[in-house]
Length: 456
Image 1 (cartoon, helix red, strand yellow):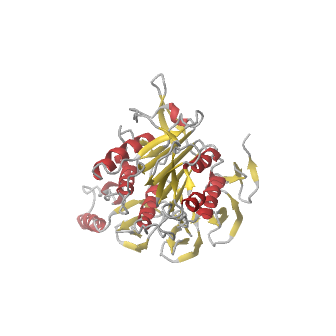
Image 2 (tube, one colour):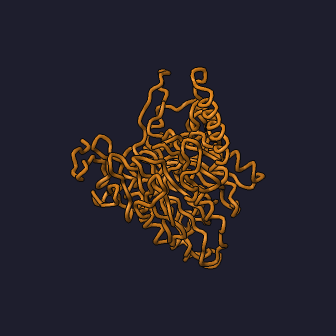
Image 3 (cartoon, one colour):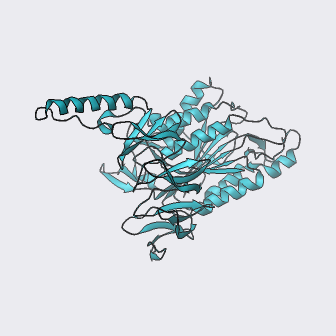
């Protein structure tokens, strides 16, 4: 079993504040989410009579990066047996699922199966852990190990956060969700703020999901903006489901039809999960990344010539990169292939593009991932804080939130622990206060770790 935690590369608008339209036609902005958390599970190396799924590893990686662009804190777990699956999902819910304004997403890629229930004869879908036997050889052993949709429903109801979305890149059947015609509204309605448990599966019972996942590719493209059916800048769970149903069915020649629905619970089926369309990063934005041309009529000829030469050089240099972030601390984060590095204001390489994941500079330091752990570098590329953390946030007011053994604390710029790692999640400091999760509740602490504000 392996865990990895991601960091946000591209800047997005985030989904904290969402513009909604009320019944009287007025638009207002509402803070919908305090935190966004995703658990991405990939089972590929099966042990007991199932085909190996070599494509799942790349699927998990791609989904994780896509969700990072959506400002999710992503946890990845691979090759879970039955016990590990149950423990991992429960731990994820315990860590993040009790704060009311969090949004939780659980994604699973691996084998799925459908059996008729021995009790009432209904078809029941199952997720297949890596140690579950093939039911054609050992049905009783399969039922003991596999994770039924009834169990998934129990997980969903344990979550206290308003919005939770379960996405299964598997095919199976079950009565977990209430299905109906998908209707995409022309704008975000106020009812998205109500509680919801939504489910999307890659296909129905008796359909086969190919190892080279059409569903995963469509999901990534959809979350990059293609699923924004009404072009309002937001992607609801409903819009995403409609997009996947159309595209996956088309690209699979109708051999695979994604299924969608909400939980059969009157208190948990009124709202809608909300994503935002990420900011464009496919091509460098010359206006944002290259210094503005000088006013030449009052500039000596030699200086003007040099200024234009510099501008042309910057433009040429910018074409070397696939994407360029805005400048921060006089350096811009760039992407070249699947690696990240930094350039100066002339678009000259300042730090070699060698990192798989990296962040913008903040207060003179940037977080980078090395061998699945996070540390910090300075503006020369020197490693200042060794990569040993599962996840980190950028420095703010001299401190950075870091994750150790799934708990969050704070360090200073030397790497010294200032506030011990004991929180479910944490935000950076702002005006000497940071919001953290403690005992399932969000509280505010000062820079000594003392709780100064509690929810009423």
